[in-house]
Picture 1 (cartoon, rainbow, N blue to C red):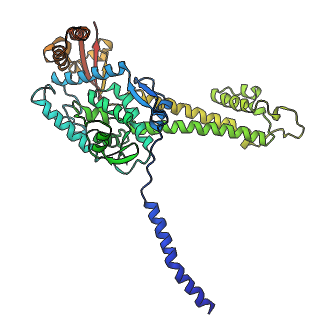
Picture 2 (cartoon, rainbow, N blue to C red):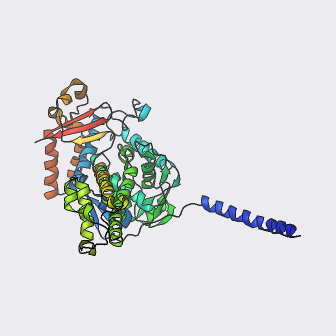
Picture 3 (cartoon, rainbow, N blue to C red):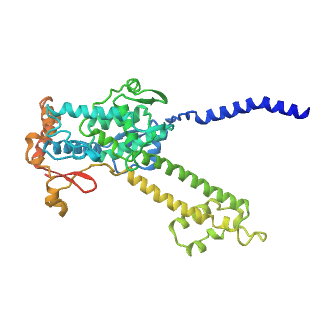
Length: 447
């Protein structure tokens, strides 16, 4: 009888257990909740110059909504690089991922001559808009569910892109997305490892109103997000897909957030160690100058001094006959372990900030160098990539733009500045070079 009752109870419970397992299983597969930022620092503005972006500033923008703008020098560097890119193509130079293809298509000719000519301009515009639209489909899910990760990627890219050759509209749109609270839906997987093309491709899609994006934390079509923010989709030009996507900003941005949070964890670890010492009536001799002088390592000594300062004034510095002569190794060696962790943290911080403030772009663009600056630049192999833009002004795309602008402004300070800039073209020497591993465009300016 009891056996039959137990059997009936088991049968009655079985559907409930099955239901419970099913619900747990469904919950495990449920889409993670999107975590939007709390913009408590939206009244602050971080100046991006390509040189001095810090981990703390990345966090302010990514996690707390600080605004961004480019320095005057950074804007000029982008403009000069963009002009050099156009000039190189106009002179017939092969430029990777611009007038030539990418990857195994690097020898495929996409167009020849001046990108701004009546024949080529529609072609280049079409290639670029198609590339940006395809970017919305790049990568694999799940989508990144932390807004700060995508924003960290974008601010890192905006800073390092100042070394590259983006069009003015691309450069401005990246800043606008950050400042207006538009965060593209970005897939978490699909990066090549050596380049986060898919994730930055998702950003490209948003810029032209394709794909999905968040606007102040609410997901919607990218075109709607742009409209609500008062922005228009851009028409990319030049090698804008290359300028935006050829980067490791997705990994660098996440690393910056990790470095910031690791610092906080290490600070807590030191505080907990100090509390342990107080709670255990410990011997403080391992932290003293006597011991630290025998182990002169910058970070070990620094951490010992940091913890020692936390317990200054404690009863531990009073004589106590009951105090143990030496703590267990797990306690007395804590400052050595934590000092070593701080040392590794510092190395990672330096590496991430170096990455965020330098170019990982292909091709590299550099204004201010010429064949006379290094012997290899004057060899026949390198000289065949020399751009002679300053010696023949008739074709220069930027010169034509400046001349058209001069014709549309009244005489005055702006006109005098334009005439001065036009005159500078007679004294410029432009050069471009491609190395074995990575194409390079560079230019020497003088006068």
